[in-house]
Image (cartoon, rainbow, N blue to C red; front, side):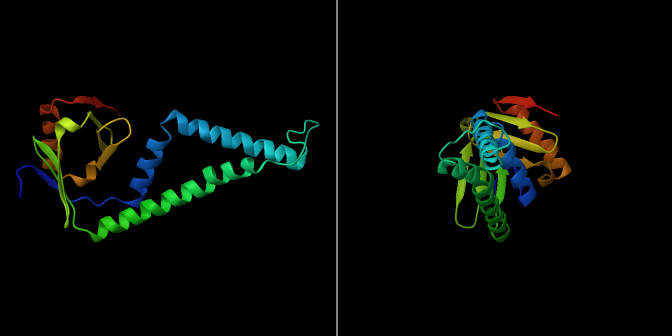
Length: 171
């Protein structure tokens, strides 16, 4: 095997869900879509219960006012959950190793072996429980600190310090 820090990931569904939704809702566009869908639900409820003299839709509720909230609050979260659940199960069934050294980050699987040079990454962010390795504004790899043994964690932090990437520490 390569010289470097070798870890075997064992992500949990809770970690995948937390990371995905936190990443998703950090974007303003997602928040805007949720606000619009909530506004549509409120307008639909006002129409259905006619709690005021103001009638927002004189010809009934537009179908879009029903479809968008259903997509935003039911279909999208359900499909995201099922997709992440499948990814966790696949990861449990497959032998995967993450290898970190000063030249690259390597993902070694049974049928593939990918080496990503550190120059393709934008930054590494350390949080209380995770290391977030950002490739760009849209793609981030995350590694829970529990994947690392005590010495591996120290070695990985030293590796981060040696790399010429933008480093940030958030608590």
